[in-house]
Amino acid sequence: MVLDSLIASGSITKKEENQDCVEHFEGDIFNFGIVADGLGTYSCAKLSSQKVVEFFIEKAKAYSNDPNFTNHKIKFKDVFSDVKNKLCEFATSYISENKIISENVFGTTAITLIETNEKFIFNYIGNGAIWHIRGNFFDFETPYLFPWSSINILNPHSVPQNGKEALYRLFTNSVTNGDCTPTTIELSKDEEFGDIVLLCTDGVSSADQIKAGKNTAGVWSKYEENMLLFYEHLKLLFINNKDISRDVLNTSLQNYLNNIKPTLEDDASIVVLITQKAREINSKYFKQVEEIKNT
Image (tube, rainbow, N blue to C red; front, side, top):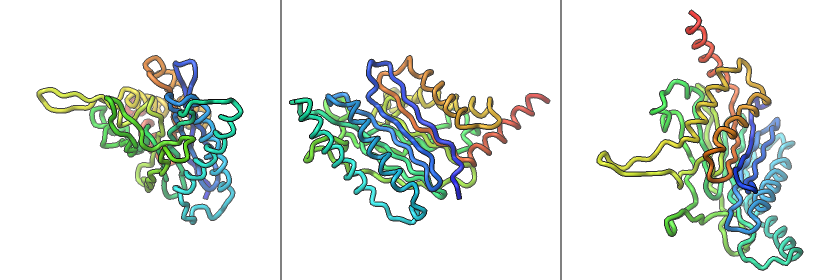
């Protein structure tokens, strides 16, 4: 059975250099996506995210022609370890050739997505977000979007340090420092309403950067404006397009990134996947809405 989901990716920044990297590919057996956030405290942040993404894409494509892939018990810890070793090998050569003295040279986060016919498999180290959105998100008014139809299932590998978040799992070029053991999450597909998945770096969303406050009513957390805008663009995507193609999804994704760019404080990278079931549910709903308006 060939996968019929649509997947797209994109990245944007207000800075001189975008230190994120994002990539995806569609296959007959599985779809794959990855976002990586090169850490600015490392001198080769951009190259860090680029090489890690490159190494993961190589590994994923090595499995793409294997008809028994979904039956394999892939040890994702070993996959991440292999990528770590490749980064260390590359870094050793790069540091020597460029005579770099700094200790903090390569550092990045990584979030990966594998979609099979039955489920989603997520692996990550670091922070960012993995948003799972039910296909019937249109049923909910804005105050109820979170967490009723949408939830971030990524619990960041970070701890508070000097008033900021500090990562305790990440990819670095150090053999001894930087734990790259991934957290693995498997999620069955929603056969009733379909699924929409958003992977993103912390420039878009991350649980360790949510603004919280306190008043007489108690402790509250602020709605993430970037996510509310994402919902608005999702609605427009279905309202304005009877049939959503890859080109249409790519255009919608870029419009969203351009929309949030003025308010960004960091690089922003995303991978979006929409299953066929979610597209059917939304198309049917917004067609009914349009018919009601015209009566």
